[in-house]
Every structure is written in C-alpha cells, then in structure tokens.
Length: 465
Image 1 (cartoon, rainbow, N blue to C red):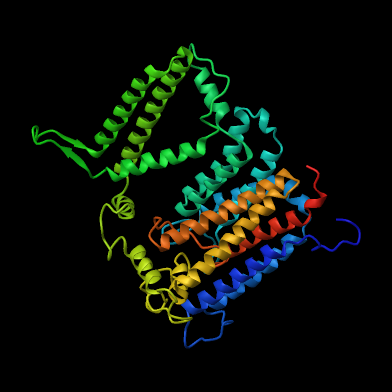
Image 2: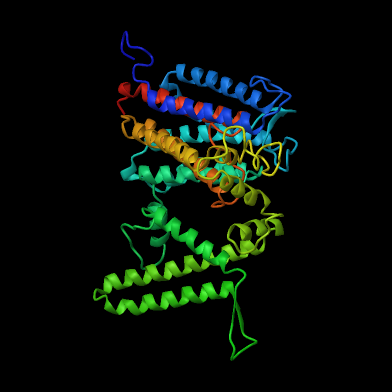
C-alpha cells in the first residue's frame, strides 16, 4: 500500500453494500419466519432470530479481521489453510451423527460445519496452484493435481454424507475451465497408448463443459426411461425395458454416423471420425449402463426422491412433502405478497414447510413479498454475482482472479440450487441460501469468503503477477 493511502482507498463499496443489504433482508426474514409473540425482541438470543443477529455480528467481526490481514498472506498460507480444513473434515467423521450425518464439530448447540469452511481452503489452494503453472505447457501431472485439490475434500464431504456441499464442489470445475485447465493431456495419453494411433491434439478435454451437458442429458434420459417398457403387438412376450430402449437408440445413432462417413472424402479425416464415433459410443454406452446400474442399486427412498423430482411418480403428502409445500408457499405469495410477518404456509408456527428458516428460507420471503419482491431479490443477487465477475476480470494477479471466480461460482451454485429446490426445479439436497439462511457456519464462511475477496481486490494495484 502506498504511503498515506487509506486501507479502503480501493475498497469495492458496491459489492459491500449489496452484501449488507442481503444480510439485513436475511435477518428480517428469519425474524418474520420464526417470530414468537412471547419473545418479540429481535435481540433475544434464546430465539433463532436473536442467534442469527449474533451470527451476523460475529461474521462481520470475522470479516473485519480477515480484511485487516495482508492479501499476500492468503497466497503464502493457502496450503496450511487447506490442510487445516482437511483435518477438520477428518475429525468430524468421528463425531456423533446429527440427523444422520457426521457434519458438525462441537458440543451441544455450539458447533461449526467444517464442510462450509473447506470451500475457502479449496478456493485459495486452487488459485495458488493454477496461478503457478504455465497453462500453455500443462501436462498430466498438472491436471491430476488440480483435480486432486478438489476431489480430496469432495470425498470427505461425501463420507459425512453431505450431498449438497458435494455438489457445490463441482463448481470448481468451471473455474478450471475458465483458466484453461483441460483434460486434454490425460485424453491424449490414453489415445496415444493405443497401437497405431498418434494424436498431437484433441478437442475433447478443451470442450468438457458441453460434454458435461451431454452427460447430464444422457443420464436424465436413462432415468426418465427407467420405468418405461417397449412392447410389440406381434410379439407380446417381447418386452424391452427402458435401459434397452436407450441402448437401441445409441446403436442406431452410431450406425447413422457411420453412414454419414461416406460423404467424407479424406481418408485421414474419415479414420478420425470413425475413432471418435467408436469412442463416443463406448463412453455413452458405459455411461448409460453406469447410470442404470447405479439407479437400480440405490436405496428405495433415494430412488423415490429421484423419481419424484423427474415427475415419474407423485407423493405430495409423503416423500415429496417438502418440495410440494415449498412450491405452495411460493405460489401463495401471488404478485404483491401477503405482507411482512404475514406468511401463513411457510411460517415456523404453521410447520407446513419444514426447515423454512434454513434450506427453505426463500419460501417465506416469496410468500411475504410476492413476485415483485422475489424479482428484486434476484436482481440484487445477480448484481452481486456480476460485480464479482467484474472484480475478477480487473485483477492483475491470476491468483486473485481465480479466487474471485471461485467465489462467484460457489455463490451461484448455492443461489441457483436453493431457489431451484424452493420452486421445484432442483432436488431437495439441503443447501443454504447465502447471507439469508439461518445458521452460523454458512454465515461465517460466506462472509469470510467475501471479505477475503474484498481484501484481494483492494490491494490489486500492488500485484505484479
């Protein structure tokens, strides 16, 4: 920092103000949702809204401490921070289970969720590692190490189990894609290990994002067809299950692809296309088989959740109760809403929407403020995400930029999945809405994440890398 220059001379006030607005909106929503007439004081720490105020205050204090630390410390100590979060993830596996998961570290009502803080450690170390390598000369070792940084905490989170946080960790794959880390070196090594094959480059790893959507599409098609059966009037005993229908479709697609090859004049190009078709068919068939086998091997309640989400079955008062009630609460708000503290379907007192102050906090907000209120909320959140992307692109340091993109993707995942859960567009996997949902661990981790970003950005003019 230059002599005589204030610590907040380059502070991004726009991002900070939106962050504060969301905190205020979140606290007011928790207060309205969990309101107790016998304890009307917002600062009554025996109530959830009082505890939320306490968590917000403590998070702001932690944020201030984080901001006072020199930005270079986060780069230098990214490995110890990452290892510390991994240790916490290991320790928590030996704690008594709470609601069927070993996700909390603490005693009684006082505890933290290490998985929330592991996102910060992973973001910092991933930023340090990618910023230290030459992307143009990346090799198999580079790709494996970058993925290992993400996969190690993912596996530990899955062992808890915490499906929500596990899904959020996949957001780092998009950060890698943005920075040019691809799977090309691994794919090339695999292809060139085949006798008679020699490739200098491949587009498969570079374009893994579109391929990821293809994988998701094939997986959904397989699951949607899981209960289908193809029958023939001429051969009544011949019945082809949904898995067989998908495999038949893939086979027909492969045959049509080979027929198209006759229009390719170059023998070299034709050989390449043949190889791509064969590999694609093998991979697609393997994926379909894996999805089908995995689905069939799931427990019945897990199958039910997937089938309910995909609309393959209905159970509004059973397994699909949470999602059904959440959609009813959001819809009951109408265009203008019922008014503050007048939510009926999603209030804690009515208990129609379980966890309405945590995972389903969007329900009471939508019920109180209606369509107009939710649009304002979404605009605020989108402004925050776009502001973070703007901050990322103005960084001189690749470390700062990668960390900023990590924060943006983590927040986007939470925002999209949580609201998707509330309106029936995403399965219920238990994921908080940043700066809104009741809870100390998520509030502290998101706030620390935000203030680290603000600190890195405030000292961006000093960075030369």
